[in-house]
Image (cartoon, rainbow, N blue to C red; front, side, top):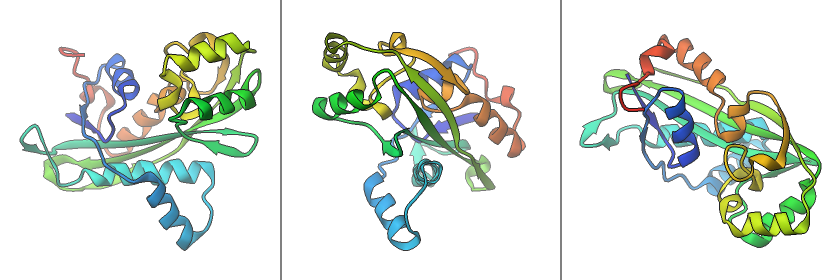
Length: 214
């Protein structure tokens, strides 16, 4: 059974590999800002859990009908999205050093909630047979960093491409005091939530294992 990951996130790919799954990565090409703006114009503001779910679903649906490695998609499609909530403000990827520095000024020595959305489409046999989704969250408590640590961390470039401007599984790990919730949620997707969704679609989690290549 193949799992198609509608993402180019190295962190999500590595997380799945560590869990015994070798995903096929497909860039979804979704304009996230446009998708959110369109939805909010029609339905009103999105809560954090709703926002990550909307984008996870859009990403998964974006790759339906595509060929991967010269063949139609035959398996499960996974879309995911993450955002970090601090003081009622939702943060995605900072992209720029000045934005990352501003984020750290607001979260240094404090805590926030990392939200991850999940959307799984059953595309076995080359057709959509069903889909399920669910958000997950984890509370992240930060250590107190000095200015030199913040500047050095931002200079590595790592915080620029991740929600909340931090990682828990790489250089940012020592700056995290605790995680309350599924730790994999902070990496980009909750493995326990994904397992539940896969089982809801009638697929055994162990059928996704690809232990010969992961």
